[in-house]
Length: 344
Image 1 (cartoon, rainbow, N blue to C red):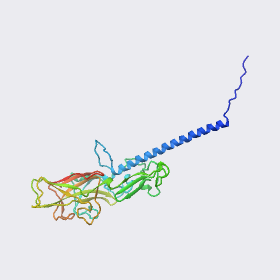
Image 2: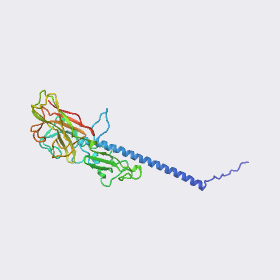
Image 3: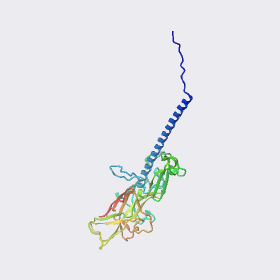
Image 4: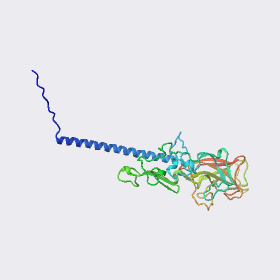
């Protein structure tokens, strides 16, 4: 005889059990959202740190050896001799700036006293190999990392005033300095409530991208085979600057050495030629600006001066067949190199 089929009624959850289950699921969901939020914030923070390093490297180049233990000159400062006026200049070249190319160094016998720059008259172009340098604005210093010409921090911050120029970063420019900062998760100046609100950035002071000229000496070496008993000799450093005033060459000049029968430059010996801390040359009272040399390649030339007064029409390049020209490499935050100029 078949056993009758009986429906077993499933026992449901009580109201209290249901509330407990809902509470547990809510706690797990909230914890998951919290962890995901923390992960996202950490990712944005880390991305901002990486982007700050990209900006710093685009301006002053790499702070670590880049190949076989050697440093290489790179970045906006090395190309243009100045700090950028805003971050947009790291993406596109502004009108008026000289474009990157092989440029001929220019020696002006009587440069402008206001900034030591070539005024375009009484100029000698150093057409030889030693006077040719790759200079000028390169174009995109961020190597394609800007999206549609915009490079924001990891939080995607925007600025109310200068967003087009600085992409939401807080940029503060001073006399020879530049500060770049992300305003954090809350996009407000100050550290805010959470750890992600902290302002993070870097400061570039003059020592971060240039070296003082004052106290630098180069050696004048006589290898002509005879004692020099007449003439006044100086060293001039030619530095390219590319800013809103255009591309031009600055000329800084050392103290002189005046040879005479009483004080000859003996064959095979050397004498120091020193540069001043301010102005275009020692004793220059018209230009009181502090002389600092940006990181990059520059040109050192030997000058003969017939009237012992610097920076006038009697200055001339020492040129027994070709000017005495020495390329000079200057790295950020380092002493100027040990170099010599030779009389042959």
